[in-house]
Image (cartoon, rainbow, N blue to C red; front, side):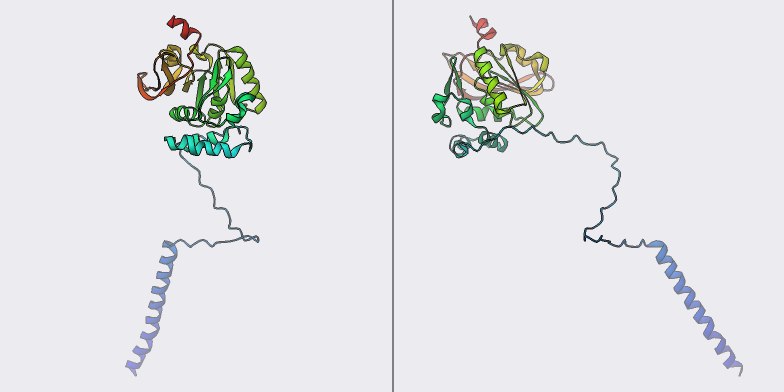
Length: 288
């Protein structure tokens, strides 16, 4: 009888111990493991927006948005052929430049007598002893500038306005100067009529640049002095690029790329042999 009583008492004790161990394990699991959040959808079936976490890093500048340059579908196939046959095969591969050349209607910028030749592979006369450059030359000079959106560019020699319109496809800060007053007035009226609101134009001697708007990230010169004008070099920002033809009208002219390093020193690279109208004004006086 005594042995049976001891056995009866041992059973409940073991059960209590087991229950305590199970309870302890459950408490540990609850304390150590976070519950997985449930995915809840609203009545439309759209997942809820995750809570925003505050960003402790410095905010990055937003991308520059260009004002939309004017567009036309007129003669679009001719522009495409111009790029495919005259420009891309010669090594121009910057896609932004190629797109700009496709977008800008060259026929807007030539005289009525030259409309049929607007997309041919050569320069055309625009009056006042000036020309609109060959499409390939416009493309290569534009590519040399390596323009980024929001950079400030100065053009010396507005001429027909075609080069300025191409630049306006790449940045919304375009400045251009023309020394021939009647040509400047005609082109300024054309740019306004066509809706190029991001091109700032003035009449003046491009040799002196545009000091009030300096410094410039890029400068493009579409007439040829004997050497780069010092005021333009001064107005080029550190890290800036200048594309300019230099040389005599009667001798060889080189298309060169000048880079101003961060310490102010200049590097010079020959790119092409070219033929441009001479730079007049102060540049011409210096050579007389």
